[in-house]
Every structure is written in structure tokens, then in C-alpha cells.
Amino acid sequence: MWPFPSSRPLGAFTALLARLPSQCAVCRAWPSRPVCDACVARFAPPTARCGGCALPVPEGVSRCGECVKHPPPLDACLAACTYAWPWPDAIAAFKFRGEAGRAGPFATLLRSAPWVEPALEACDIVLPMPLASGRLRERGFNQAHELARRLAPTKTDATLLLRTRETPAQSGLSRADRLRNLRGAFAVEPLRVDELRGRRLVLVDDVMTSGASIFAAAQVLRQAGAAHITAIVLARTDPPR
Image (cartoon, rainbow, N blue to C red; front, side, top):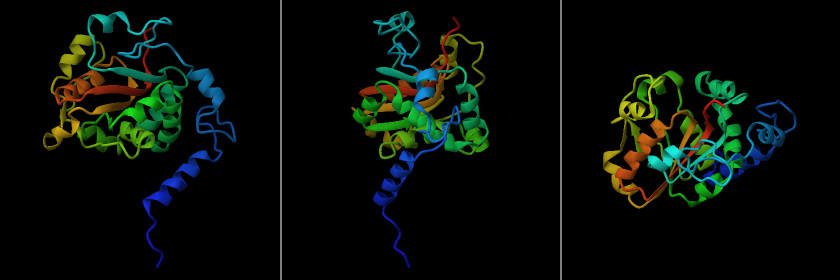
């Protein structure tokens, strides 16, 4: 009987597969990286963004006016792209049509964004934004967890941050009302609170709309004693121009 392979050869094999040519997930060019350089340059160009909420800001500006007036519970917030064509349909296929394999190309896109690699290297724990149990059963997987474990497989922990309840629809609510709507929706695993004290954390999610969910989760982590929290999101919904 063949011995069960160790995790190290499996990890090396996975890394080798990631380097093999494939079709671009956006333009379908072949051979290509999971998201080709041309599509990254065209659809996910480096953009000056607020360090607190990842909204676009003028060059040289580190925080938007709202984050200056009401600082969010994040030390940094990074986004790979704007939530605009071609990303909405691709992300919808990932989340709602069971195409979990898109997590690999999306993780590649995230790693191409400025400051994401240093944030992952500097952190102690990577936490995917949790789903409520009903949503998890419906989708079959948590898209944030799929992204996180491809970004940092040895640091990802999907059991520390919990979603305690589903919340009503957030559309049409102000930022303050969204935050109130999410009060009590997140919690830290009670028996593991000590693991967060003094730690550097990265929160991962697919889409950031108002930021209310990430801010609510970050507030819970801050109260548990986290020393530094960076949010990393695949796409950020920008205000209309």
C-alpha cells in the first residue's frame, strides 16, 4: 500500500499547479495566468484608496472625510478592484452558482493588489468573514473562507470569528443604520478569546459595499484585544461619479 503523502509534497504540488498555464478567468486567453496581466492592468489598476474604508481618494490623501470624522475600527483596508464590469458577474458565479474554483484566480488577483502581500506576511491570523448558518447551507461554502485559505492556508482560521445571526437587508439604510442593524451579529468564539489579544489580524471578504459588516466584525475583534486589523476585499463598491 502506498503511504499517505505528507502535507509538504501536497503543498509543493499545489504550488506547481498554480504556476502552470491556464485560461484567464476574465478574457479566456490561453495560455495565461489565472487572471492575465492585461486584465489586471485594464480592470483592476492600482487606485489611490482610503486607508480606512478603501473608497477612492485623490493621490496623496490617506483617509476620506468620513473616516477622518468617524474613524472605523480598522488600521488598514485594501481592495483589489472596483465592483464594476467584469467583476460583478464573475463574483456572482463564484458565490451563487457554486463555482468555488474561481477562488484561485480571485486570490491571485488579490495578491496582485498593492500592500496585500505585506499585510498577509505581517499578520498572525487570517479570518474570513463568516456566513450565517442558513446562508452557508444554501451556498454550500463560504466564499470568504475559500479566498482566505488560498491567500494564507497556514494562517487561516474559520472558527474564531462567528456569525451569530442573519440580518435584514441593508439596502437603503444609512451607514449608521447599517451598523445598528449589525449590532450583535458577530462574536468571537468564547473559549478562544485569549488567542486574539495582541495579535495582528487580516479580515477577508469578497465584496465591500458600505463597510458596515466588516466594521461590525472588526469592532468585535478590537474589543477582544486585537492589536492591528487589516481588511482585504476582492472588490469595493465605489460611489457613482
